[in-house]
Length: 170
Image (tube, rainbow, N blue to C red; front, side, top):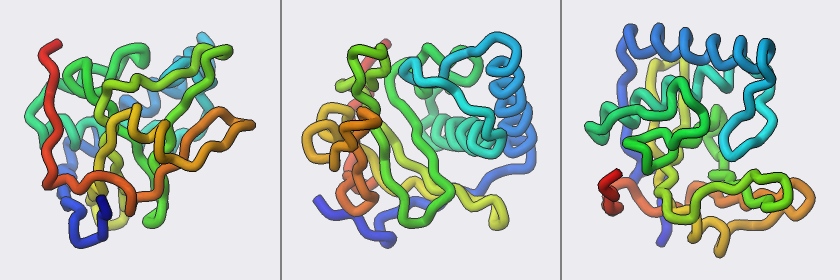
């Protein structure tokens, strides 16, 4: 399995999607400030407004692309897509899919979930779906960062988006 930029799928964002994603991202930051709401997998949610906004926009784009319900927009304990798939986003063209695995801290990403990786470029109003991988695969082949209890998988090791994954019925 080797993914190249030629395998990436380009998705043009609509103005409504950008506006809605900004509102959701702002709400996530407000919840963090007010209630200390945890992020995905129980991680401490940071106050990086841009990342919260990019995440929400990418979740909306992926839900629209796959024609499924974006289930994790408001409740971060739920999975992002149809209560099954997860979306990860980076603003770096040479980024990584990062999967958490810290049982002691209750920060564990689901092994059975397909993680769709997105690279977002706000200037061009586009999201590129760079590939996907099941959680168990990322934990097996990713480069472990033992200190942070994370597995890092570069884009080139992801399944190409043209290779389908199976949606589980929720």
